[in-house]
Image (cartoon, rainbow, N blue to C red; front, side, top):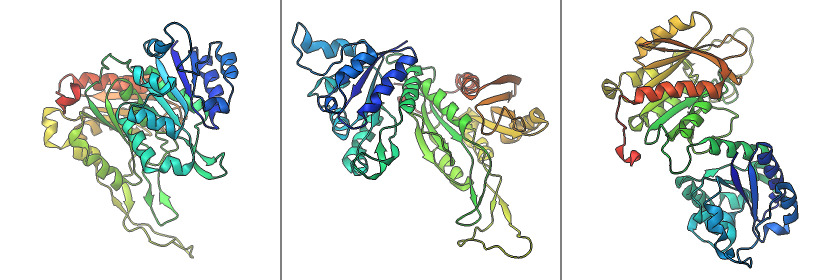
Length: 413
């Protein structure tokens, strides 16, 4: 159970913060609400007091002994600060170190992790000043829950409305599972690149050749690596999954895009985990115009895509064990034998093999069962959540990293 401070600022999304407080409580956490003066114009403090069964803080200048340092006391006791909604004004204060009310003072004083859920008009969210402020905060380790798109209170349609309460609560849980402030994660100082999802190979502007990968396994690996303190880059094909907090996301579409994104970054990485389902073949020449239906059959000429895993395996730095190289083998039969062959051919350190013909494992489900194939043998991981499987894979990655130095020693300082 964690003690969470819930900051509520002055936006119409403040009413959703009530459900965020309730969701956090349902997960067993203690919640204290801090409301700005503007927030009280949208929702009454009594509502949060009734939900949290705690006094709601609305004034930095509350009378009484030691009232002027209450934000310092609270800052040292909370496990997490969640601000939802976070208006453009609040984001600007946080990014620029302004402390003119209780919430902004608490933000500066606390060393607990911080999660912001921005909500504002579309033009405000896209304004260069707001974009820069959010980038500044993310660079300092603040986690962001992206706003949703749709009808806004101002009557516009676009991106800017507060994320749904369940999404904010889920993001808070991810942050709480991360390494506590002041403690070193087991992967602190390491840089890890994870690939995820499918690639789409265009036939024409309308159609493409793809596969059924949802990206869930790769996203679970990225989340787990970040939880252990690594600096994580996630290169992902098209997916409906929300960007994991605290992870640098690079969105790609084709196998060629994936190749370019990985190879331009691999020299900085301590480990590469290739969980994406990258197309083996692509169209020799996709049509610039929609291909029209015609009598008879249609023949598509496919050409081989670049072998990213094999190319990394042949890098000169691999003779020193960098980056640690993990590949995936999605097979429908003779799974382990194919994985053993792939391990040798690609010069990888570990191959994660799974039978994608199973209905309860592999593509587009929440569970997986895999075999971890390495030079030391085969370890079977029984059916469980992909998050749990990610933990087993990262355990092996940690063991492999013990034998090699960090790429960037400054990252460990």
